[in-house]
Length: 518
Image 1 (tube, rainbow, N blue to C red):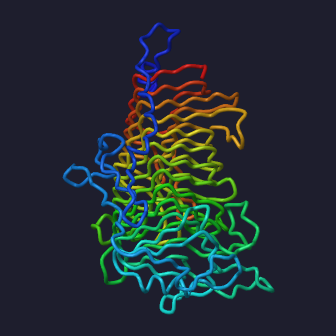
Image 2 (image 1 turned 120 degrees about the vertical axis):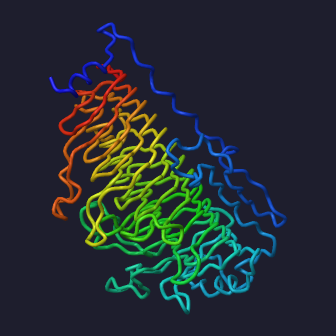
């Protein structure tokens, strides 16, 4: 009998055998209340301003992931930019809230130009058509200003309709197009709150159904909101995006690149116009510089948060929240992911490290994992491979995903604990569980105190250690076996095989509880 088999046999504490049962995994925490997450107060103008979540819903990560400074102290998010000046109504500058198809962009631009730091630009209830672009930045409709907020009357009451690549023109041609288009651009901007409106487009094509090829009818803006560092200025920071709905975009709802302290809170992402390869159909992305590594705040996406948001893939989303290109110390918490096509939460495979993923509810991931660390694909030199070290995945509920959590391509030192992964029957678009947690080429992974339960008649594996063939498109890059995996204190029920090791070395499995019934 191999060393691993001996360890495994000793660790499976079966009640029928009279062995002492291991302590069950710690219960999942109750969802954080609104008071725990945010505090709200109305300023003198009546604007509701959410205060930063200065106290985390949980203790700081044991591996220093998420909102933790290098010295181990809590990284406190800045408070949202308060409105201390004027409220500028876009109607007063010539915008027409009637859904009449007239171009409202010039009037909105005039309101933004007139605003000063501390002011806000306000949209009353209506539909605002954006049929032209900024006179300088031809890739965007609206350019934000430092210290100026934008607020709508309500997410369901105010709609900005982009005319980028609507492809509803005669012959299918678009009159307004750009390879990197965005509705709202915040390159090099800081100290901004955007809240309470919907960003949509005039695109009227057929939504995609296949993630393996690009949608021939794709269109709309490439991004809803685009945040990036300028060539020479400081990195964007202190930005809050609250209570928005973003839909009918091609690539990304909110793209956050080389920025810090950006918070996406209580937003909805849905109905991407493409979800094929090449970066299409993502809800939120936190990305740094390809192949740059963790070199500091100028180059990396760090201390950003997406929370309390919904990623609705029932029509079309490839990924929900994606972290890539050396993104570190970011947090994905208390969100809902519903039927994304591939990994709902994706550490995309270029050294993403010290990110914290917790408190999320994931349902029905169709062709991937609830949470994935490491990735294949991409074109050299910007191809994907391993995620970085010390990502902390905990207290998530993943239900009816093809795979619960997957770690691949040489990703090191991932901590996976106190998650609940379930395969249930009789639910809409339920995907049979292949495995609860899959460890391929991963080094030093800790899997502890998780509950993995199969309530169906389908065959499944609770925890699966298996050879990684790497990326077939890049000469097998990332191929290898699991190394030094620790599997402790897990509760595994209803699986054909509770713990299955097909490959790997240095595995320790102990104090796990196995039952044939869910």
